Amino acid sequence: SFFIASIQSGDYVGFTFFIGSMAMMAATVFFFFQTTQVEGKWRDSMLVAGLITFIAAVHYFYMRDFWAETGTSPTELRYIDWILTVPLMCVEFFLILRAVGATQSLLWKLIFYSLLMLVAGYIGEAVDRDNSILWGTISTIGYVGILYEAWFGSARKLAENSNDPKLLGAIKALGWFVFAGWAIYPIGYMTIPGGFLDGLLAPESLDLFYNIGDAINKIGFGLVIYALAISKSDKVN
Amino acid sequence: SFFIASIQSGDYVGFTFFIGSMAMMAATVFFFFQTTQVEGKWRDSMLVAGLITFIAAVHYFYMRDFWAETGTSPTELRYIDWILTVPLMCVEFFLILRAVGATQSLLWKLIFYSLLMLVAGYIGEAVDRDNSILWGTISTIGYVGILYEAWFGSARKLAENSNDPKLLGAIKALGWFVFAGWAIYPIGYMTIPGGFLDGLLAPESLDLFYNIGDAINKIGFGLVIYALAISKSDKVN
Ligand SMILES: CC1=C(/C=C/C(C)=C/C=C/C(C)=C/C=O)C(C)(C)CCC1
Ligand SMILES: CC1=C(/C=C/C(C)=C/C=C/C(C)=C/C=O)C(C)(C)CCC1
Image 1 (cartoon, helix red, strand yellow):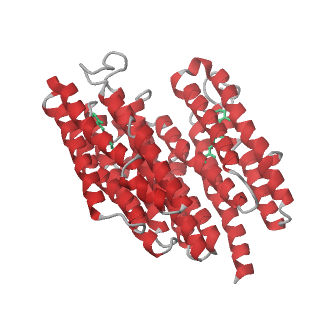
Image 2 (tube, helix red, strand yellow; image 1 turned 30 degrees about the vertical axis):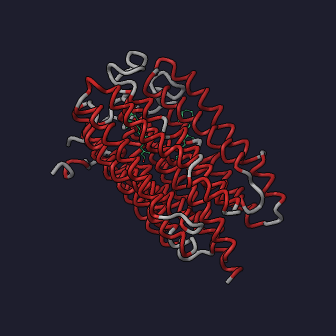
C-alpha cells in the first residue's frame, strides 16, 4: 500500500504532517465532545473549534500523502485549508465577544483582513513567486489588521469594557496567539527562494513552520476558548 | 495514488470543488449538531439543512475527482445532486411556513417547478446542446415560478400575514437567495458554447459559477433557517 512508504527516517517534515493529522483528529473528538459539557451559548464555540480541527484533519491526511509521494509543498491544499479555517477562527473571536456586544461588522472586518492575507499569500507563493516579497507585504497588511483588532481595536475594547476578567484574559491569550503563533507563517514564507530568510533555512522548512504553526494555533486557540467556556459553565452549575 | 494529480497550481475550478467538498462536510456537522440546540419543531428544519449539505458533500467528493481526472464538467453528478437537493430546499421553505398555515399544495408546486427547471436544464446541457437556448428558456419558466412564489405568491403572503417579523425576515432573506444566489446558475449556463455569454467567459467558468452558487445557496439557505430557529428557540427557553 502506498501508505507504507510515507514515513522515512529523517523526514522531519513528513513527521510533522503525520503528527499534525492525528493531533487534529484527536482535538476534533475532544472539542465535539465538549459541546455536551459546556453551558448553552458556549456550545457553538466548541463546535466551531471542532470544525476547524476537523477540516484541518482531513486536509492533513491529503497533505501528508502529497508530501510523501512528491516531496514537494502541498501549497494548494494548504491555502484551501486556511481559506476555510482562518475565517472560522474569526468566527470564534466573534462568538466569544457577541455576548458583550460585538456586532457582525467586527466579524466581517476580520474575515476581510484574513481573505486579503490569504489571497495575497497564495499569489506570492504559487502564482507570482518572482514578486513574492510584494505579495507578502500586501498579505502582511491583512495580518496587521487582525493583529490590530485583537490588541487595540474594537475586539479588545469590548473585552476591556465587559468587566469580565475571564473574558479579557481569553481575548488577551488569543491576541498572543495571533501575535506570536501566527507570526510563524510569515517567517516560514520568508524561506521561499528570494525571501529574506532564503539560504538561512532549507526550503522544506516552509512546511515545517506551517505544520508547527497550525498545530499550535488551531488546537491552542480552541483550548483557550474551551478553558473560558468551562470556567463560565462552572459558575452556572 | 490518483489523488495527487487532483490539485494543480492555478486550477481554480479544482480549488472550488475542493473547498466546496470540505465546506459542505463542515456545514453538515454544524447543522446536524444544531438539531439538538433548537426547539422542537425547528429540529426538522436543521436536519433537512444538514441533509442538503451532506448529499452535496458526497457529490462534491465525486465531482472533485471527476474534474481532476478528466478536466471536464461532471454534468451528470451535478444534476444528480440538484435533483435531490433542490426539492429538499423546497421542503425547507415549506417547513418554516407550515406553522403559519402552508399546505402541501405549496410544497408540490415548488417541487414541480424545480423539477421542470432541472430536467429542462439537464437536457439543454447534456442531451440536446444544439437547442440549449430553448431548454434554458423552458428551465427558466420553472425558476421564475419558484421566484414568484417566494416574492409574491402564497409563500410570501403566508409570511406577511403571520404577524411574525422574524419569520417574514427569514422568508425575505430566502427570497433574496433565490433571486440573487440562484441566478448564478443560469449565468453559468449561458457560458455554454452557443449561449449568450459564450466567448465572454471561459468554458470552465460554468463549474466555477455552479460551485460558488452551491456553496452560497446550500450553506447560506441553511444558515438563514438556523438563525431563525435559534432566535425562536431563545424566546421559548
Ligand atoms: C502575514 C503573511 C502570511 C500569513 C499567514 C498567516 C498568518 C496564516 C495563518 C494561518 C492560520 C492561523 C491557520 C491556522 O489555522 C502568509 C500568507 C504566509 C504570506 C506572507 C505574509
Ligand atoms: C434557470 C436555469 C437553470 C437554473 C438552475 C438553478 C436555479 C439551480 C439551482 C440549484 C441549487 C439552488 C442548488 C443548490 O443547492 C439551469 C438549470 C442552470 C439551466 C438554465 C436556466
